[in-house]
Structures are given as C-alpha cells and as structure tokens.
Length: 185
Figure 1 (spheres, rainbow, N blue to C red):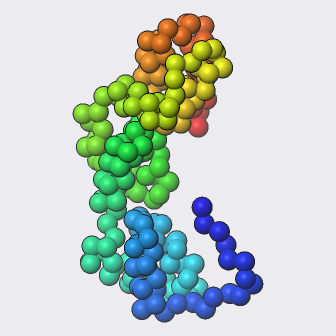
Figure 2: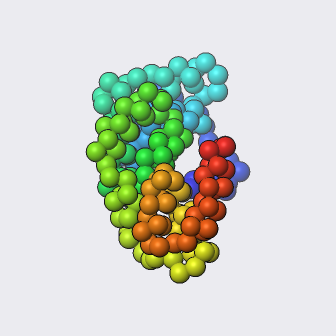
C-alpha cells in the first residue's frame, strides 16, 4: 500500500528525461503494467498536453527497450500466482483486470496458464499452504469456503473438497447463497 507524502511541499513536475529515469526506477522496484506506470508518471508530469506527450514518449521508449510489456507481465503474474500462491483462475483474472491488462490478453494468458491445471488439486494445495485443516463445524466450513472463493476457485471445486471432508449437505446449501452473491458482483 502506497502512502502519500506527509510534507506539504508539492514536488516540481518532471521533464521527459527525468520521467524516464523515474519510470526505470519504478520498474526496477517491481514489474508494472502500462496502465499502472502511466498513472504513476501522470502524477509526476506537467499537467496538460505537455505532460501527456512526455508520458507517451517515455512509455513508447520503455516499450521499444522491452522494459514495459503487458504480455510478459500477464504471463509472469499468472504463473507466479498459480505456482507460488496457489490461486484459482478467477482470482488471477480479476487481479489482472484491476492492473489494467486488456480483456483479450487476459483470456489468452489464462487459457495458456490454467488450461492443464487440476483446479481441485490446486485448491487443496492452497489450503495446505495456508495451514487450513478439515472444518469441525459449520462456522469453520463457511470460513474455508470463503477462503476458497476469495482465492478464485469455482463453487463446484469447493463443494467437491467439502464433500470429501464429509461436511453435511445442509451446510453446503449455505454455499449456494455465497455463490449467488458472488455472481451478482
């Protein structure tokens, strides 16, 4: 989470060269999408057309140098979120959209990354990685279900895991309302 500067001083707008240096340093700290980088640069550039053209020139130059590539970002992000965090496709898809990746690129990336994935196995790995054990009561079952929903797994996969844990069928009906609320979002 980024925090605003506490000093009341307003920083002077950066020219194109300084914006480029600023962008390279921002990309050096972590990978960013074009949309994220544009937001950062627009906050440091001159207001108006002059600043927009400087931001466009910096972004164009970074793309030519292959420092900024949304396709590479999406592929790496999806792979790492699947392999390291054990997240489901829905969550990764939503995260990529929030980061400003185009819908077509998200579809291509997700199809390539999650096509051969066993969602149930991935969900079990997610639970294991988080130290989640078999629920003892309805309340714990709901907590596990919410965790899996937040991690981007389908309701079918969640039901399958909970059924294998012998969770009562009445408790599973509560998940239906959870899924309906999620679809309304």
